[in-house]
Every structure is written in structure tokens, then in C-alpha cells.
Image (cartoon, rainbow, N blue to C red; front, side):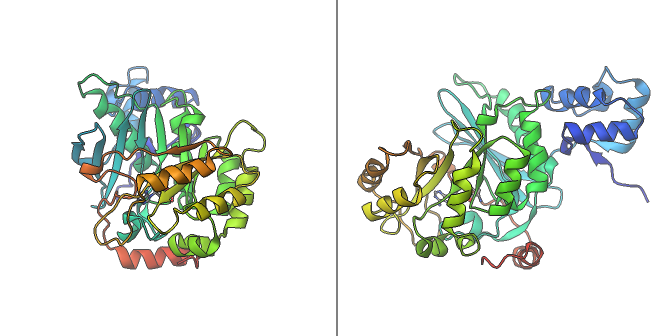
Amino acid sequence: METAKVNLLGLDRKGLQSFFTTLGEKPYRADQVLKWIHFNGVTDFNAMTNLSKTLRLQLIEIAEITTPHILFEKQASDGTYKFLLQLKDGNCIETVFIPEKTRGTLCISSQVGCILNCDFCSTGKQGFNRNLSTAEIISQLWIAVRKLSLLDGQHDHAVTNVVMMGMGEPLLNLDNVLPALNLMLDDCAYGLSKYRVTVSTAGVIPAMQQLREHTDVALAVSLHAPNDELRNEIVPLNKKYPLKELMSVCRDYFKNEPRRSVTMEYVMLAGVNDTPMHAKQLLKILKDVPAKLNLIPFNPFPHTTYKRSSDTAIQQFKEILQDKFHTTVRKTRGEDIDAACGQLVGEVKDKTRRKERYLREINTDAQ
Ligand code: SAH
């Protein structure tokens, strides 16, 4: 039986170095191939002219560079650009590009669906199928960089920032997410600044500690509630990792880099978590946490009973917090093409059975 080819897109510098060492090649081949794949966008080994002919032939035999298929792409009236990507097994994921005056942010998915089941998020309502591989995660950036550079128009379509805020919980797929983050930061690949690559988590505490040990990227935490009672209800993972422990990890997260802080995401749900009392509770739990706050007006989706807070409620909430913490309100983008936060659904095959199996595997009782 023919053995499966290795997809070189999924290997970071270290992975490629050991791949080439096993072929009896020097480790610097990793740099050359990284540049071909990620910097130049080359997927044909024959075009890699600084590799010997023999090595090129060998690579054609044992390796491949393949990306998911773009099933659909669409631009919203505000310039937000959404890609629907089909994976080899038929599952689909979504990636969104958000252009702004001074930056271009790509929002990347880490799983097909999500198991966390946060009450206000439509991805959670879609069920869960599986983790994305490193190749599938980094492919989203590879594809966006290539496709966006072909768009004409006045504004710049360069990807300057990446946020792991698409479908899924990146910290439940850390083994595949970490090499992808390494590629984002690697100068031979995308060379993004560690301040401009952000992992967002609902608060998987042990994985947050591992993330800190292995990479330097920015951290965002989906907080959404200022007390356990409410957070248990809207972010069920809180039952496993409650606020006190979560805040303690956040307090220490950047203790060796005192100028950095954790971004706290807080979705604004009318009448649920948006009153002045909630804002005051937030000030208390965030005491001594180096944090900035990002208030996210709720984006509705079919069958949800939640409503977006009024502009006045959001403004009042912000005013209570902003003396102590830098507080911004996220501008809602891409709504007309369902590309806004919490609206990414892709297509998740075989959801329930897979979800049960995965929950057993990661042994969480957070549901
Ligand atoms: N699982 C990770 C990554 C997803 S990030 C996490 O929870 O952080 C997506 C961000 O959008 C999170 O902060 C999430 O809570 C927020 N979000 C989800 N649904 C939303 C909705 N309907 N409206 C606004 N924000 C939403």
C-alpha cells in the first residue's frame, strides 16, 4: 500500500529541520522550503530551484503541499472578506479578513465546530467534528495572503494581524495550534509580530499555562460575565475553570513582561450582563490583573433569544470601566455576510457522535 505523503505546509521550522535531517539533508533546507511555501506561495517542488534535482524528485515522491479548497468567497459591503474552505473530509470552515485603515486582521478557525457550547455563540450550536491539523490552520493564512493580494482597490489587503477567534477553542487543540503560531512568527514564513498574533480562549487553564511556556503571542480571554453564577450559565467551561482561578492565571500571565496585558473580551447581552452592577463587579474581579477590555456588541443569529445591548448601555458600561482599564468597543464588521464574531458556522459533519467521543477524550465535565 502506498504510504500517505507528508504535507509540508503543516511543519514548522523545527518540524521541517527534522524532516530534512531524516532524508540526510542539512537543516538549512528547512529555511529554503519555508520561504518557498509561505513567502513565495510555491506548491510545486519543481519550481524550488535552489534544491538539487535529486532532492526535488525525492520530495515529489514522498511529500506534498496541499491546501483546502475554496468553496466560496465573499466580500461584505464594509470590505470584510469571508472564505468558506472545504477540507478533504468534506467538513467546511470559515476564515474572515477584516481590513482597517492601519491594519488587516485575519480571523482563523482552529476546530471544525466547537464543544464549549457558549450560549450566545452560533459556532457552539453547530456541534463539533474534529480538531484542525496544523496544515489546515496555517492554510487559512496561506490562502488569504495569496487571494487578498490579487484584489484590487484602494485599501491595503496585507494581513498584519492574526486572531485565533474563528470557529473552535484553540486551546483544546494546542498540539496543532502551536506549530501554526510558530509559522506565523517565523521570518522565513509570515514574520508577524508576537504582539499582532492573538490566541483567544474561553479559559482552558492548563493549556493557558502551556501556551505561555511555548510561545510569546498575545492572549485574549472570553470573559463575558463578572461572577461565577452568570458565567456558568453562558460559558459552561466556567464550571470546570471558575473565575477566581482564571483571573489568577491572567494576573501572572505576563509577569515577566510588565508592559503587556491580557485582552478581556466581553459580549454585551441586553439585560443579561450589561448593567452598571455588572461593570462594578468586573472592576472587582479584575483587580491587579494587567488587562484591557474589549466590549463586543452581541451579533444575533437564528433562534437565539439574546439581544444586543443598546448603545447607551454599552457607553455607560464603558464609562465605569475606562478609568481603571483601557476599554474599547469592537466595531461590528461583516454582518451582511454572516462574518461577524460568533456567526461563523462552516459545515460540521456528523456532529453529535463526534462531539460525545471528543468530550470523553478530553475528559471534561464542563458541559
Ligand atoms: N473559543 C475561543 C475562540 C473563539 S473567539 C474563545 O472563546 O475565545 C470568538 C469571540 O467572539 C469570543 O470572544 C466569543 O465569545 C465571541 N462571540 C461568540 N459569539 C458571539 C456573538 N454572537 N456575538 C458577539 N461575539 C461573540
